[in-house]
Image 1 (spheres, helix red, strand yellow):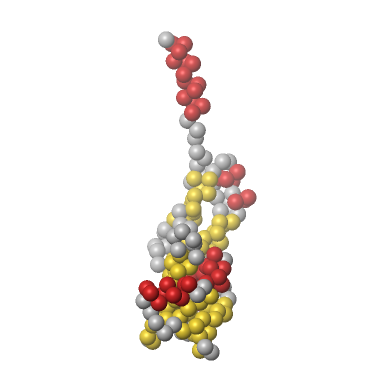
Image 2: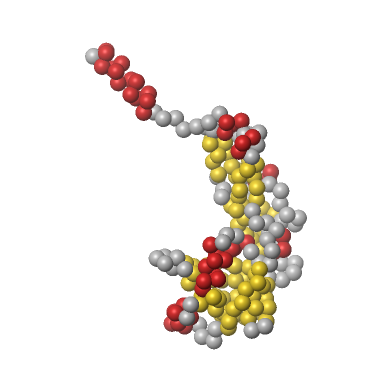
Length: 205
C-alpha cells in the first residue's frame, strides 16, 4: 500500500490566470484543495519538488499530508497539468480525504511471470489490454500497483479482472470479465512468402 507523503505548501491570497502566472514566475506551482465539505483552498507548491513527485511515479495514487502554515490536511491528487513544451507542472488539483471515505483511482498493471509462460516461450507476445485498473477503495488501502502473472499461460489465454486480488472493501469499476492481459500469437512476416512466390511466378511465365 502507498505510504503517506509529507509536502509543504503556502496559501495563495489571489486566484485567476494572472495570479497563477505570477506564482509560476516565483518557481512555485499553483494548486487547489477541494472537497470534504469545505471551501476550495488555493495553495502554491515548490515547482521542482512537485515535478519530482509527478515524474517519480504513482503520483495520482499517493496520499499526501499537506502542511499549509501548520494546518495539515490529508489529500490525494486528482489531476495535474504540465507545460506542453517545457514539461513542468503548471497546476495540481487535490481532493481532501477523511477516514472511511472512498476514492476512485487508476492503479497501474505490472505483468510478471513471463519466464514461466509456455505461450511466450513459443513466440507468443504479451498484449496488455489495460495498462491500469480502476477501483473504488479507501485511501489507506490504495495499492501502488497490481501484479498480473502470466505464468502457465499459452497462446490465446487471457487474464480477466476478476482474477486480480483487490484490497479489502475495494471494488472494480469495470466488469469482472474485462480482459486485462492476453498472450497473443506471434506476428507473421509475410514478406518471405511473397519473395518465395516471385520466382515460382517467373518460372510459370
